[in-house]
Image (cartoon, rainbow over all chains, first blue to last red; front, side):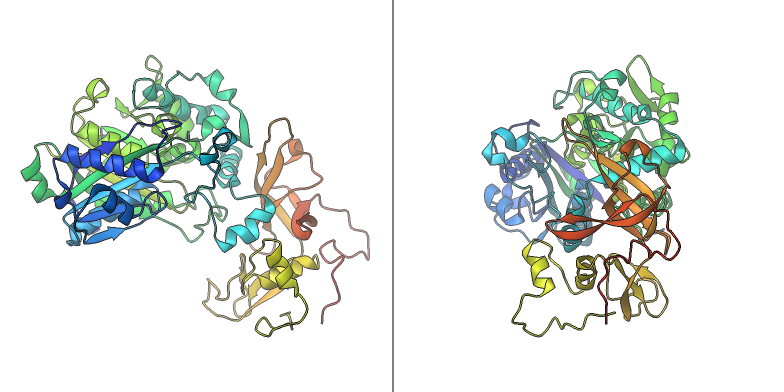
Amino acid sequence: MRNPVRDQVAIVGVGTTEYSRNSGKTRGGLVVEACRNALVDAGLRAEDVDGLCGSAFQASPQYVQQGLGLPAIRWWSTPPFPFSLVLTDAVNAVFSGACDVAVAYHSQFRTAATSGSAGATDPVRAVPDPGRTRDSHAHRQYFEPQRGLQGSYAGYMRRYMHTYGVSREAFGLVAINSRAHATRNPHACLRQPLSMEDYLAGRMVRDPMSLMDMDYAIDGGDALVVTTAERAQDMSDRYVLIDAMTYGQRESAEEDRYTSLDDIGQTIAADVLWRKTDLRLPDFDLFYLYDGFTVITLKWLESLGFCGVGEAGAFLADNWDSVRGEARLLGDAPLNANGGNLSEGAMQGSGHFRDAVVQLRGSAGDRQVPGARAAILAIGGLFTNSTIVTLRASS
Amino acid sequence: MRSTESAHEPSATPTPSAALVSIGIPIDYDSRQYWEGCLERRLLVTRCDQCGFWIHFPRHICPKCWGERVTPQEVSGQATLFSFVLYVQPGGDGYPVALVDLVEQEGLRLPCTVTDVPSSELVIGMPLELTWNEWRGVPVPAFGPVQQRRSGQTSRASQGAAPHA
């Protein structure tokens, strides 16, 4: 399958903000702060940037351009999240020549829509989150009178448990693994250790899904600077190359329409990936498998081919390092080394990408995965937004 | 089965459509007959005249044969439970939000609640039958236990249905 973008586009800068439950900043301000930090990291000035890409729910390209004093932008786009959709749009724009230096950005701001406690004490947060409100006709006509679509992932989890005879402990391993990494990551919001007993005692919200199965709402921002591989060579010895990018979506794309547990976009994204990249699972040193809900991570393990359907929980148990209290894949590769959405904080994948870039540049400090050369980022859920990006270190 | 009331002509009296919009259900030209069926406690599902494919949520072009002759038809009300979630509020019992598959076609799925079945007795794959709940005063489909039908009794799906021209 064609993959002309391979090794042609590079990530040359990474920036973030503090991740917290209450930043005292706006969602747009968090974006601008992360973009500034990414450009400083890349050693670039305002005049060097000619492309902007990010979810308009967080900050419009106009807002970011003004906030950073960027004199001339000649390409922009506003994809929805997860962040992989933002990054891949920026990569394609650089590859096509629509722009030469694009900043891909994302932020999150905790509101009543994503965090039950957010609106209770702070009127600033008692507002609907435009990024989470499904204002489609379908939602308002068919789901709202039935009290919501939020059950879709939990409904999938129950069907998965029923079909394969899987208990909640399988999902608990995903949560415990993410937390183990977060305890060592100063950037992470949830850093107290999590035991299986703690997991099973989590407050049930969307039975069979408890708070422990759901990502942790935070304030934060991330940004990556994207340019051509040719220009990256002139800028730094250490940058990160795009290897392959795939999406997957099926006919039954709406979250409640799947006819079977494998009637999901993940399996398309994985099938296409293995035909685009020359890398294979043992070639990767870093695995970031989306953990917005624990069931998504289990399903990514199956879709990527680590194990058969319904077997991901047993696979994690078989590949569990009981000393570290986390999974180690294919010998010694970590899973969600930043702590993921579940414990570092819910950033729709931008946290996973930020950590992958830092690790592949060899600049993760005492969290550095030794010799990390390649990363696979399977970002997004089951249905409408399954994507995979593979990254390689330049040197 | 199409309503004789034209959506394009002004009317002096509030139409059922206007009443639905006023309570926050933003009906459109695809869904209008579905919701007017709900007002009569009749579950209407759009079906392709050409190939017979059932289309829910309603659309005006059939996704299977691409034809554009579609008609809402009343369904049997028989279904099976595909999956369900219990919405848990602190101090309360879980409210079941379910996905049910109508027997008319594989994957013909409705989001709805399940009534009159204790949550501990909900089992994926169990048969269910149409009943009705109310939301802001409007009947909305729900599903409950299959009723033992006596000879000559009509199905619950058609009870309460107004005579239709």
